[in-house]
Length: 165
Image 1: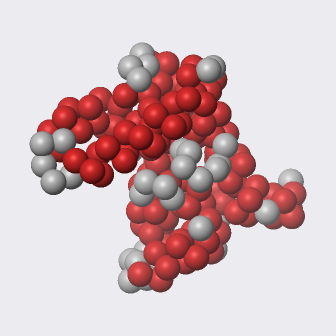
Image 2: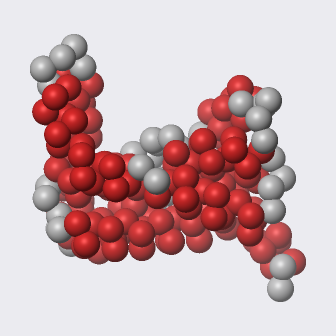
Image 3: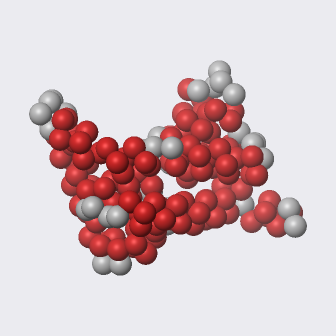
């Protein structure tokens, strides 16, 4: 994943570092995890990077929760039908793990940084499996807090964090 992030950082090299981190945090798959790694690579202070990454990762969530089913219905009648089917299959795979524990499952799915997990996929699962909007938002935001804590330790390292205290 670091290689992908490094390539994006290089490709976006002409713009301010904070904007690079924000754009990476907006991207599916990379999300907050990628944003924090990019911030570390770009030597952005942790306390400055965290809000940028969180806002970048949160921004698409309401749109996914509210509109993804309508968007998928429209796209199923176009040449994008295969892509939509793959996204729905990915959501169904994630849903098996999540539905066992519903809200806590969604929180952990979003929060534990593994490939194929995160706020984008969690929002997709919540929308396609008709979670209550309030429950989905609370679980996804809780997952983002957990992911932020885990990825801050991974991206900035324990020695850096200890030096702050």
